[in-house]
Image 1: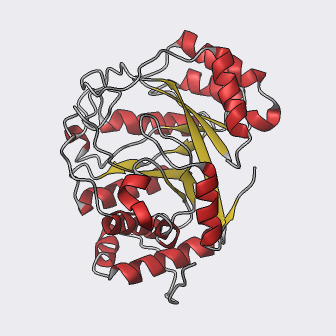
Image 2: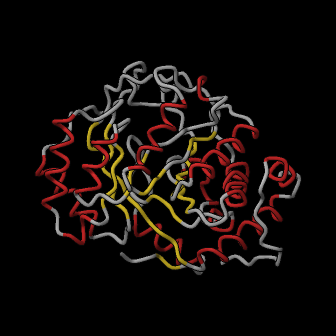
Image 3: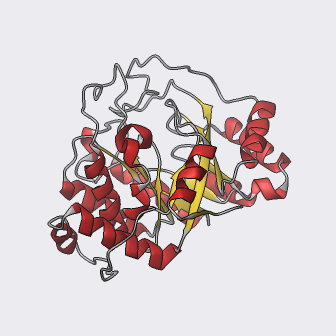
Amino acid sequence: MYTTTALPAQAVSSPEQAHALLALSTERLLDAADALRQAAFGKKISLCAIINARSGNCGMDCRFCAQSSHNHTPIETFPLLAPDVLRQRLLDLARWPVCHIGIVTSGGALRDEELEQVLAVVRSLPSAVRSRVCTSLGRLELPALRRLAGQGVQRFHHNLESSRRYYARVCTTQSWDQRRDTVLRVRQAGLSTCTGGLFGLGESWDDRISLAFSLRELGVDSVPLNFLHPHPQTPLADQPPLDAEEALRIIALFRHILPRTTLRICGGRPLVLGARQADMFRAGANALMTGDYLTTHGSAVEQDCAMIAAAGLEVIRP
């Protein structure tokens, strides 16, 4: 269990103040972020898990992604899961102590007939499970998002990935503004927003700060922070992963800019944080994704729960 040095729990209100934080030592930066986390969330940690419900053959050209048809990473590809398979996987994950269960599909946007398949599965779930369902189904229009909300889906995930300035170096088949507009439609539909980014793409600290303030302006509810896990046969295959200290400083920076927003540590956690995974809470994280990711292995839920307990924290039970 870690201890913290008493520091004033002060959020930052401008990019200039955020840059000034980076002059702090890692110890002081993390301790200040931990004070902010404790003030907003106490000892409570929220878990989520996801289902890869349609894999690969994505027409987007994201340079980091194993599922892009522009890349040639050897992964399993499959169409939308059959309704009975998807329903059973949702029920299986509902036995875990996770507050949110995400249905994730590859591609620019789920087609109408596929959306109806997903909605039919959601309708068939017990209400206690349905209330925990989240979706990540691409660039949906407002009517489709309202249909999700009308069936009890609580949250929609759609990352901005990076800053507006840097995004064109990440993906050219859609714009940062299109991604932002999807998030705005999610809010208009009455859904909770789960929107964050991916770090280690070659972006600068300016880009990271810009992304954090964009999320703040959008009023995002939950911010997933992902770290690049380089995939073979993608343009970023040879990009060195971030070291643990830099990743922790990113988490702490986001906690200072988003003092009351859920910060959820997701993809790349085992690779980048390694033996320092428990330090993500000291850096300000109050949530994490457990189990496997879309195309890489994660941590077992039992292992994550034990880590949280060893840090003197408590898993929120749904």
